[in-house]
Image (cartoon, rainbow, N blue to C red; front, side, top):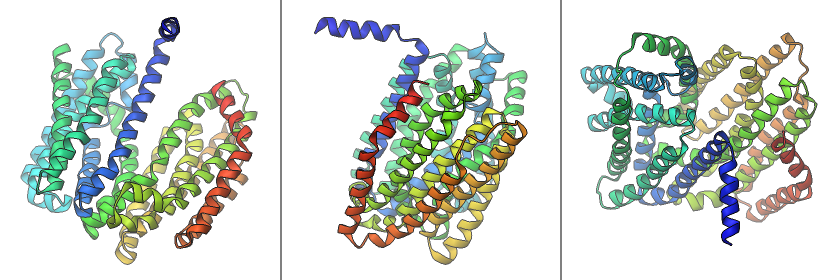
Length: 482
């Protein structure tokens, strides 16, 4: 037994550091998501729908405002800055943190001048908004540090700190909530304090390694590179967050809480999407680079069929999933499930088209598509929520992701035409599957009152997957083996 363990350790040590880092970072991400999924049923049972809605709105506004104060410097520009300033990694991180700190303080000062109006607009108290700004200020340190650790393959501290936060936030949050009269405030405060304790330590650590708070060269470089990308990042955040914010403002926190649970449950499938794409993208890019694109169409056809079946399966099992995740207070979320799960299908499909745009470095097209879709989402939300209630927001999300996929497909077709490259996807099959998934999702709503019939459809989908298991396995092997 000792020899077996020793051999396993020796083999592990021989794995390249980049591969090891990738394995641990992927595992860490899966554990994080797993913990967040496991804790949903806990907090839906101790928080009212109104409290859960307020927590969701707090998180949504935090994610939007940090785009302006943090400029997403830990994403787009970060890797290019680390390459350009190869021997000044710590200086890059500290100066970027200086820039985000300055923007956070200036934004907070602006808030203090107009806090009454801003509080009314955000739907939160001064205490919560101040708490939000503390989190915004310090979380930029965590984001920049995290990007540096990933870039330099220092995965151990990253994994330890990330998982510590992932475990402590719900654990301590649970005890704070059950022992508090104002449960929403307890949840938000405990979550923010625990995260900020870690973030503050990282904030101080970054400046202990390099004390460059201001660098005209690096600040200018970061602003010039990332400010043009802010519309793209903001649009993506609006697509993910605007529904809950607008429901809270136009209907109420309780309805926002119900919608948030339905949205979170449906978006569990994003774990599947991320997992598939993390393996598919490198494989696809290597195929394009070597001009061996023949196998891409067949592979994507199988993947689209599998994803369509998974979406329908999730929709069919919505009552059982929501029974696990929440109480009867959230039962209305069941009717949001079909359109939201189909939204994930289109989110999956549009990735195929975006991959081509990014491969040929057409970032402007990605930004244009994101901005148009975000504006469409806000307009449709305002109209549909006002006239048909908060459940309509799930259908506007679906409409927007359908539009998103279509516009990216058009962009991709033009790129391939200009590059004189053959289309790698079966547009006809994708169109048929897309229409089929939408029609079936509408049909699923009717099936919720017929349990036996619904279970027969579940068994049928599982049977299809079992009978075609060899096709599925062969495609997975094809991608894994590049």
